[in-house]
Length: 336
Ligand code: NDP
Ligand code: PYC
Image 1 (cartoon, rainbow, N blue to C red):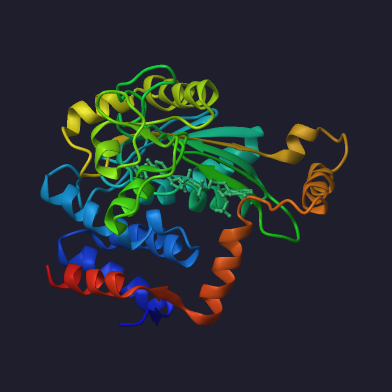
Image 2 (cartoon, helix red, strand yellow; image 1 turned 120 degrees about the vertical axis):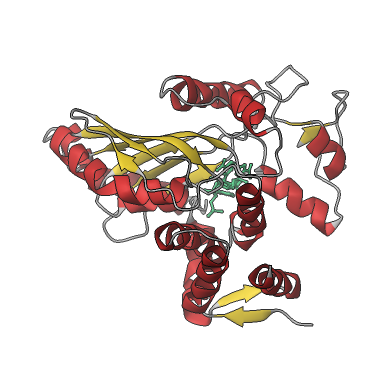
């Protein structure tokens, strides 16, 4: 069978129907589908429809609240806090965004703290929602313990994603978004599904020996990117987006869930900055950013996000390509 193509809105309707079928509220289902379809649209398969089955397993295990209504805390100052009430982070972010943007404009910078959320998503959709308002943003969260600290052999850190966005006037925003492990765990799971060996340097087995076997890697530990440097950034995320915001660190999240087969539960920390307020009249920060970004591209180097935006343009023009296995999985999930 050949790959099939599906328009974005048709895929969105299918994904919403899958979540509604098993009891997610309309608001939760819409927010989940938006993230998953964005992943497929932008060629980010590790956080696209492949994640739906994990969301449904999380529901079956009783570890996510399918009709949670996030609650915005009554705070003032720079910290906007939203309690996801055990639902997925996606809807909590949507609900917290307007107050977060308005507080950032009023104060020059603000933080959105999301507590008690279940989280499986890529962070770039949230970052793009911030840059769309002309603001710069940083987002981070723990995950569950699957990564050994540099020099160690046992999982302790999560794959802890870290994302940054800078707004641009006449181009898509500069956005990077990466796991602080060598790759996202979802990527290793896709290698296992395909029966392919892992590249060197991604993981160690349960005895601490380097391995290219996805099963041994998933039973052992993944490695941080950049050795001690990635390990330190992942630790910073545990401290800021775990301990500091009163939510689970990755080892606590794994203890709570008892499994990496379902989506992790923890919090998330998102920071936003108003560049014009920071510049304080000392030049136009977006124009200066533009000069710097152009100097990168002038060397022939590609910008982070460039591959995603090219994939997005193709998807918007021609629809989203699904492999036969992906098409079959969607059909199976709709019947379940
Ligand atoms: P990748 O290594 O695929 O990409 C990381 C970033 O680097 C992207 O912004 C990418 O841009 C950019 N990039 C890649 N190659 C180049 C290059 N040659 N030159 C310039 N920039 C480049 O991502 P990961 O596997 O580390 O993470 C994938 C996703 O997994 C992320 O979206 C992350 O949020 C998510 N994740 C979520 C977790 C969670 O707990 N919720 C946990 C871990 C990861 P581009 O996209 O354009 O290729
Ligand atoms: O791909 O590492 C990952 C991941 C963990 C939780 C969500 N995504």
